[in-house]
Length: 163
Image (cartoon, rainbow, N blue to C red; front, top):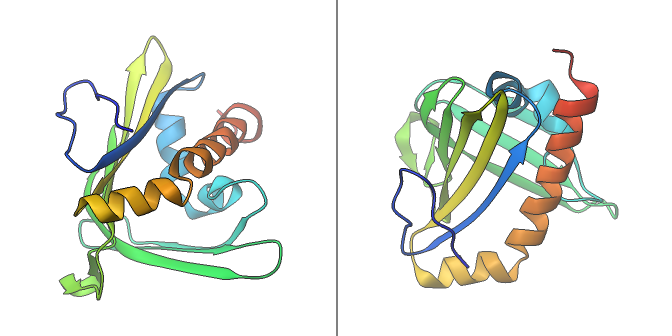
């Protein structure tokens, strides 16, 4: 499933999710770019993110450790490719810090925070290298998992974060 994104062509192997959030882009961007806030919402319901490291510069580390209720852990890391505060974040798992290629690239994420009358048009796009990876991500529950993360993000920016 793909959805068009205003101002961007839809990638061949793309999954995306979009929502209008009742918070300004700067606040939603902060929830994405400050580890103490990201750890509160990252991951679907039933998962926690007890660790998050961010080096918020191009080539800087972006690492999260997600933990399921049974203690299974998922350590994900990559690097930032683009940071345009408070409008856009792009990161990938194709590289490690120092531009060291990863053993297996899975996706690049493009997250945008567009202002719509003081609210944020939030779009998260997952761009995959091939149809197999895209299909695998969709079968892993992309829409449900990223949708639940988005629900949690909305709760953080509308109920927990100070203005």
